[in-house]
Amino acid sequence: LEPAGASYRGVKEDFLWRTPLPLTDVAIGPDGAMYFTIGGRRTESALYRVTYVGPESTAAVDARDTRGAALRGLRRQMEALHRPAGPEAIERIWPQLSHADRHIRYAARVALEHQEVARWQARALAETDPPAAIQALVALARQGDPKLQPKILEALGRLDLAGLSEDELLDALRAYQLVFIRMGKPDAQAAARLVQRLDPLYPATSDRVNRELSQLLVYLDSPTVAGKTLALLQRKSEIRSEDMARLLVRNQGYGGTIAKMLADQPEIEKLHLAFVLRNLRYGWTIEQRQQYFDFLSASAEKSGGVSYRGFIDNIRQEALANASEAERAALVATSPPPKPVELPKPQGPGRPWTVDEVVALADGGLAGRDFAGGKRAFAAARCVVCHRFDGEGGATGPDLTNVAGRFSHRDLAESLIHPSKVISDQYGASVIETADGKLVTGRVVGDDGQTITVQTDPEDASQIVEIAKEDIELLEPSRVSLMPDKLLDTLSEKEVLDLVAYLMSRGNAADPMFKP
Image (cartoon, rainbow, N blue to C red):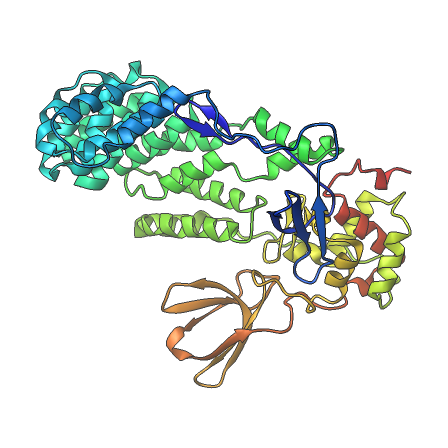
């Protein structure tokens, strides 16, 4: 921790790393050493003890820091007023509502909320200093009568939004949001006036400001927010320097693929805008609706976690629910049919592979392997249908891009040859028996409380069955993985070695394994 104004900032640094390193727990022992374990899901486990060896003193130090002590003291004075107090408390609180330190401003605002509203309500509505006014009006939105909403909006309306700093503008926009959350949606005239006030500010150059503006303008039914937000969704994204630095540190030797890795990641700011835009009911053209759903479809192909595609689907469903019947019909008519994918055939000749044979081959050395051959084998063995790797492939199984960070050669071989030995609870199938004796096996991908949705074909996400919960007699985890056995048996020795090297490379074609 480092002092940061009236509080602290946590600063992290890479301390220890290895590949693979599937961390499962870490603790500092009574002896001062770090202990951590690796393993999980029947992969090879181990316990490590880490101690310091060197000339620096390891004696205990006083963790208190004199830097920022005065500011922290002032913050604690405000925190001491987080209770009802006399009229003099308001005079002590008020100057701190505009303090340069946000922690002190926050403590002062909470202290104000603990005082009798009648003592400071008029002062809050009349305050002209922007930072103090924003904090006081937030306090009034939280503690005041909902009938005060027009007066609070009038007071916020006196702020020169264009003249505020970015942090002050964010506070003002969040104050508007809180007023509506606590006191309800404004009438049509007030909403129209606010839209006229906010529209010229959107889009801003700051992603943080765009987040707040987009939420407000969608909530207020701005007639321009759809077009402006779609333009932001289509803009070319720039790789942030901090993201590049983070990945370079954690993927040393893989600099040639960092840009591709970043390009395959979901664009968080854009996803937030799309998430907000799902609630806009009015003001769309069919072309804009199509453009929006095209963005969601492209986003679904990005490399995310186990629930990522489900989140995208939820956004899509809620957006469709906010479209009119005519719009939904037009969207169906203009949607292109899915394109079938033809996979390459194994080169072979294949043979039944055992775990020990694959491990022996991999441990014998993976030098001189063929990256393109590994990629081809990944598709020929049908791994690509269910698993994403380096941004390509399906999403019904786990993303394998970082499998080298979790699996040894033996762990990888076992998961390929005996997929039912260890089944992830995130991707496992269930066996459902219904009251009329039907058996359904598949992965539960949806549960709305009344009905569960089961994907019955891991290679085709459209193959689903919906079962009413009241009709279920038995639901239990399947002991058989959705991943078929013997997928390697169609591959030759070269294809198996290229596939293992491909999976262990994290998608880096420049890895030393692929040098002649």
